[in-house]
Length: 344
Image (cartoon, rainbow, N blue to C red; front, side, top):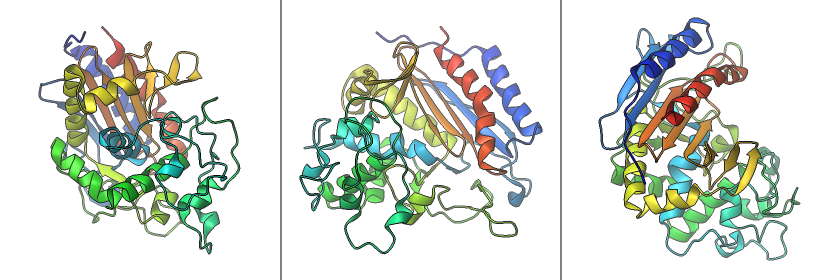
């Protein structure tokens, strides 16, 4: 049973104050919080600037952010849920030609990858394959497993890269094309795989070399960049407005129990314990005894869903603008966000 619950204004004020403090403290140039309730218009709270390179431009609903690992739930996860002929029990060798049956990762299943229980190597490091001639899927699957598949939880990007490759092969189309069709059907008008043109409404991220150009419109994730910016684990750019639209569509579908709604219900069944009180479903992290689903992106993004109350909340920042370690300073804001969507 789902019951729509409106937001407490004091909760929103607390989130705004925390965002302001992070900006004032120099942890990030600025950011946007989108929040709403199923079947209602979203609201947006913003602070700071998009970035100094963008002049006086202030972030808002249509500012484009590097979503980083939110790609997993914005692209790969829904495409798998809607794909014909792919189930959670399908081994990757059935979806990717050229993967030998005897390869260590050949029998890892789609469900194990989504639940981060695949046992695949945790280090992504696609740069180690430079100069190799074998297909990428074969190279990944040929690496020794680090754990028995399905046993323990370990966050692994490589599995989502494999799923991205599998989706492209099964459909005979590029992953970015498949995702673009999905986003268009959901009304997400600005979400896209990069690269995107530099402009004042695109949030830059990190400056890797002193005096060098800042990453701006290309993925912060090096492995996604090696794959041309289109990958199953990272590479998507999105806006607070589009995240609100995505959340609203998912929560509405959840009440109907069809399509992505049925997939979200299945995905919110705990598959592995991350730590006491937190479990992994299919792609999503589950909290509050499985009533909350959320995911973070390395660059400083987050998305939270509360199907039981119809609430959702998204955070968009470029917290890696000053340094990668700055993303850890988002912990108070992320903790408040989780508390906000969990509250009765």
